[in-house]
Amino acid sequence: MNSVIIIKSYRLILLLLILTGLGLSGCNHEKGVAMYQVDLTNLTHQQPLSPLAVILHDQSFRIWNEGMPASEDIERLAEGGDNSMLLQTVTANQSHTATASGSGLILPGHTDSVTISKKYRSNTALTIASMLVNSNDAFTGINAVDVTGIKANEPLTLWAHALDAGTEGNDELAATIPGPAGGGEGYNSNRNDRNIITVHAGIISTDDGLPLSTLDNTHRFDNPVARIVISRLH
Image 1 (cartoon, rainbow, N blue to C red):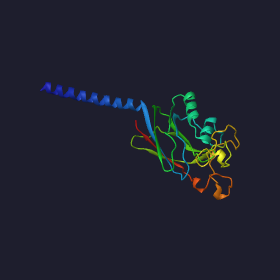
Image 2 (spheres, rainbow, N blue to C red):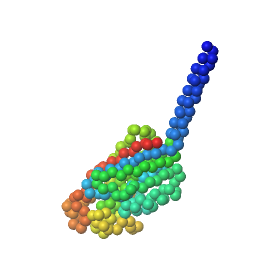
Image 3 (tube, helix red, strand yellow):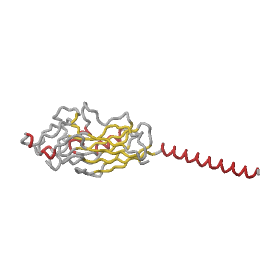
Image 4 (spheres, rainbow, N blue to C red):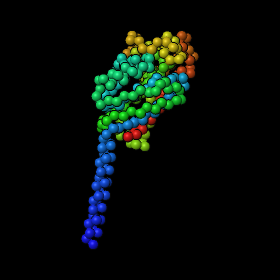
């Protein structure tokens, strides 16, 4: 009888050890690598979005600040759709950071998905940026959004508005619009606007009294211009 009790007690202890091990494993998994999937959908009628810049970083760091001048990296993205310098600068100058680029242009009504991961930290934020390419220097995205509270199977949906980088005047000329509506230059280091980031006032176009504009009413946009869904995978 005693041997039976001992065997049962042994089995109970073994079960508790297994469950404890699973619990510890789950904890280590939680504190290991955090992986997120970002799905961005273009909600505009005729504004392709440039390849996404996706950045995981500490919450104390911000890629841009509305009401303040844009960095040269944001200027390059907002005027020419080039995310490479932004991703390189963040990687070189910020610790505890991970970056990823989108796969290419996101056409109206289309979605691009990007997976990004980094070592788990309790103060992780996500920043996404992309240019509205049929514009002078309009861009959109989210800035330093806290993602540490996102749980698996509980995605976070956000709506992104259009911002004006304030680095290039919104003349809407073919020579200064890099997208398919103009085919002009992208980044130009000369700043000829008010040099602060603001909410974008919108497109004027030839249909609303700007005769030299290369844009028409199909290139206008209302906010929000993008839907962003963030899912925790790991």
